[in-house]
Image (cartoon, rainbow, N blue to C red; front, side, top):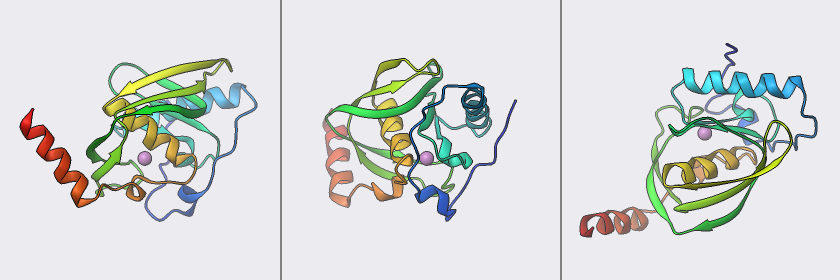
Amino acid sequence: MGIRNIRKDEDPILRKKSRVVDKFDERLFTLLDDMADTMYLADGVGLAAVQVGVLRRVVVIDVGDGIMELINPEIIETEGAQCEEEGCLSLPGKNNYTYRPMKVTVRAQNREGNWCLYKGEGLKARAFCHELDHLDGVLFIDRLATEEQIKEFAAEEETE
Ligand code: NI
C-alpha cells in the first residue's frame, strides 16, 4: 500500500497543466498503484496524478466496475448532456451540480503504453471529464451548471 497525500483546496498545483508521460517504467507503475490505493482509501471514484502532487497526464478511475488506468488520455467523442451533483477529493465539502456530456469516449494509453478506447455513460462519463480536466488545471467548480440547466434536467426527470 502506498498512500499519497491528496492536495486540496487552494493548493496552487491543482491549477497547473500536467505533462505528457513518455516513460512507461517502474516509477510510473508505482505512481499508478499508489494512486489506486489513495483513491480507494479516500472512497473516491477517480484521481488524477496532479492531486497527489505529480504533474503527469495520469488518471485512475473506478466507478464500481474495476480500475481503469488512463495515461495521456484525450476525449475523442461526446454525446448528449447531463446535470448531476459532483464532488472532488481535492475540494471536500464543495459538491455541486455540473453540466457534462452523457456519453464520452476516451483514447488513452495503458501501463504497457498501448492505446485503448474507453466508453462511459452517466457517472463514468462524468468521471472521464472531471479527471481529464484535472490534467489541464481545470476543476469541477469551473463547470458548474446554471440554475436554468438544473431546472431543465429536474423537469425532464419528473416527466420520465
Ligand atoms: Ni477531482
